[in-house]
Image (cartoon, rainbow, N blue to C red; front, side, top):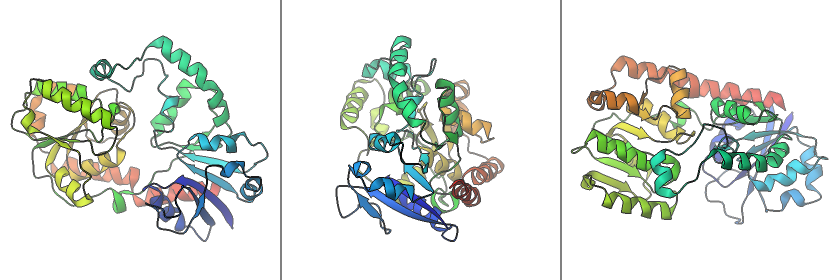
Length: 368
């Protein structure tokens, strides 16, 4: 029987990985080691080991890791560099990326920016050609280190293509895998009953809220509620966004900042009011929300250069650009027809359904 060791932080996604690999206990034994300073974990309830920050420096770690057939890293951070530097560890490595741990490999790509112009201006973000060249040069050392990884599974294959375009010497092979599946984690039978607008998913600059607010201004929305989730992210960013909204000559009484953490049911009830969703991310982000909202029957809008938009369009999903919306404002008031809704659901099932997830997990086990 094959032996796989998983390394992860105490995060809510890891239980989905545990459930997925547990299905294949007859083929491979998966052991999970969690990095935490606490003996009581917050998110993880299954049986696992808890490791300290110096785990990869311990002399016995080498022997332990060489006894496994595959090492799986869930979210790459600097603690794993000690593992990657150790040439005596021969076990194959799979890195399952989340976005935040690999977009530094994409951000230095020429003619690519994760920030729109208004957001850059408001936050003083410098994003120019010469700065990118300098950052890319500095990144090369870590890219060479990452070449110790055998397999890489980003959220979208488009992300892998962008990394390869930016760093042609990036050696890990692409492997498809995602946390959770449509049937168990990203579907809802709640109908869309309102005409509210959802703006973004978090209090982070990559939402490009300032540019989304400009679009709200252009559309002259006066009656629709506009929900902006900011319950997690950066406190300083929320404060700046609030001040900006107060200074703007817009109808702020209809803008509702969701600052408090909501239960799943409370959040889903808000989503069911939102027939239109404005996602301002250029980078891959908020994929769980995107899948869930398309499944519910909401109409989603993106900037044309969005990595997610281009992935969804390529796979035949009916989503829209802000250019299309500004050219045809009636889109805000049209519902997704039943045939399109059904087709969207079928495509989602093919991309993120239980069956494809199971096949991808089994393929990973065969790599060990």
